[in-house]
Image (cartoon, rainbow, N blue to C red):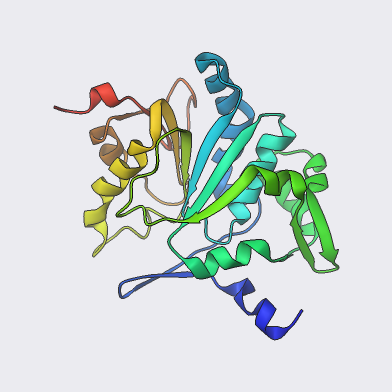
Length: 240
């Protein structure tokens, strides 16, 4: 590959005004292991309760999509049908998702341990060369990508769940804290009643802001979590 083709492999930045967000994004990272619980346990229970056969998921702040492909692999290896829409404000990082990733099968196998996923997940990826892999056809068929500014744009309707990048709320400090309530409202706009949100896994989650927007902590779906990061949308609870 040419230098121009590899240059964006290390691009992990989104610029919001004068603020630069540098994200950490790699396959099957432990801070996003909640996504594996969503795929293996919570989404199947949700589909059974609501009589659906496919879980429609938004991945908000997907960056270079290592987390997105990891989540898709968790659904696939658990035999749960899912359709994932991965969204980010940054067109440059989205341009990287069609390129091979600097990783190896050995790296992936080590990372699978963090999510307690079987080695069969490796079959969902393809080896490009000694140092690069890419998601295989099954994963690519599960995921579509789009540019979306969740600060300003509501999610389109029809999602059963949403994953919010684990660094998303960490960076919503001043001067962007004012966007928090509208952002959660924009997430809720796309969820069906009873829809689920997996909110990060790195740093504090703004529980009160979710409750104010009509969510409740999803204790029945995710008992005894180390921190409340699963929420269920109950729009009837929004204050009039």
